[in-house]
Length: 91
Image 1: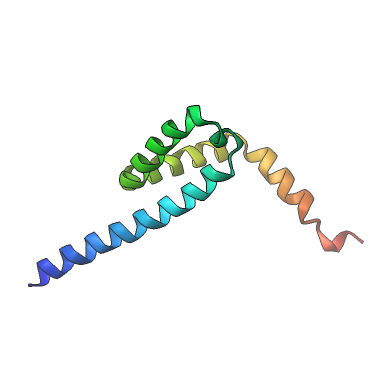
Image 2: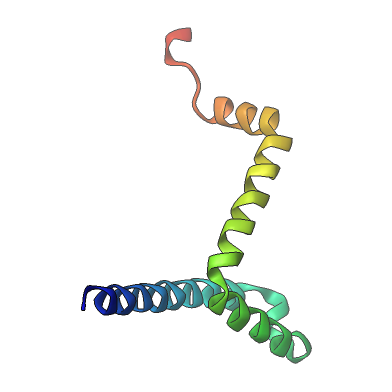
């Protein structure tokens, strides 16, 4: 009984997160200017559906790419952060 409930809860969680990823990524794709052309619309649709189904694989890989980007550009990112938040004690 507990195993069955846990399985249903896991499936429900998977479907809820899949729906959230689908809606967020759909909004992102619809804002893209290239999406308006019919040639790439089918390709983007396939990517959107595949990524929404395979989000347990896609999201960690995307996060690793984000970490790699941050590590590569750490000095520039820190410089921009420091420029946007000046030290108030320098008056």
